[in-house]
Image (cartoon, rainbow, N blue to C red):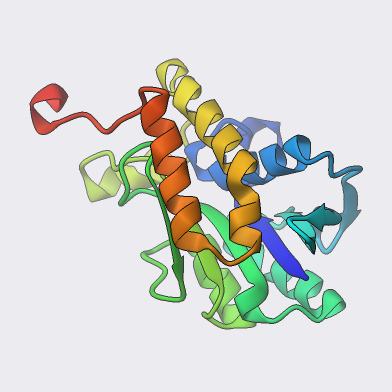
Length: 201
């Protein structure tokens, strides 16, 4: 059994935030694979069902980002899920918008949701890092991630969430590198490529 956790903040006013792209990705997985209904439990909402030959629990913590680990720990303890069977989907300012990387363990890079999970279940869980870009100045990061995606960004956000959902069975099977590559190829095929330095000026 696996636990897929989308990181974000609950409530309508946060729904479109860059910080909530983890929520968006996990909701897309549930929609794509017909996992329903969501139920209130584990200090959030969850749904479970078969995915890629395994039973997978999807969780959206309702604790706010800084206390995400409380919900993750509650679900992990209930289902007896080990840290290496947990996958956290989260925003990553150190990746360009639309880029994606998968890693196990490592530092939390100032991400309070990851810090909370690590404090409650240890550090050996998998992370799907979803790029939302950096505002360029450290002092602007907080406002950047808590701001909504701009209208012009929504096409790549929706495409990326759909592509993640389409290929998520690779993650279930532990084929992280293949999953990452498939996502990149699909995003490139749709024309969502990182601008060259000359294009950014």
